[in-house]
Image 1 (cartoon, helix red, strand yellow):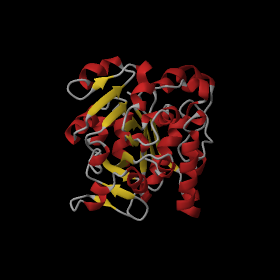
Image 2: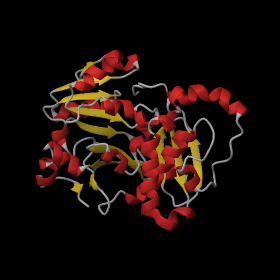
Image 3: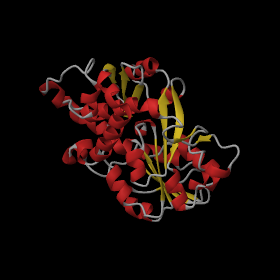
Length: 309
């Protein structure tokens, strides 16, 4: 569960904060696809309680976190708004945010993720396939880390990588006991700015893009700190995030779109997806790592699974 620093109902959801990032991702994809983009349509859509899933007519799939705020506020709107069918709609229309409805923004995000899949290769990005946060251990080893959103497997990984300390910020109190079980110190929401101000590496979940808090979070991080954005929701072309000095995007590629959407349709979440139909990747911003003096491990390790473009 990720912290929501800004009420998306007051800022227009993604359009109010993360919209610029997604607009830039859409522009990047338009350039990569060229005329071929116009031929793609949405073959299937599932709006699950944990994730939204999209399958395109080329077989590629994408998923994105469903913010609880969207579910909570959707009840009244669903009865009042006659939304068109998304199935069969041109991917360009969804990508451009031209669909109505309470889940329009997260559907757009999942569609951008699906559209990005063909370009996650060595011709376009530096890709590391070694697993959660493993490709660039210098981002975390012996550094003060602040994680916004208590993802327990990642907290375990941070411990294995030897982080000097880990501050954990999460709006869900129920996760505190598990998160603090040897993995870090839980920080009150009101201390978010202070915790981020003293960190050397900040870790945000992709849900911060879905719930519109990413802009505010980025503004709280010191300019000389490293930033990683992690989770399936961050599965779009990383150019907009790299331009904002994100050093690492840890996300997934959907390997079986049909199975992924079946899991979401049955109310399943991330753990079931990871066990069957997605593959983890790290997208590495090499220029930023060099700027921070943290690129040596990636570039010199003979055992690195990173593939340079």
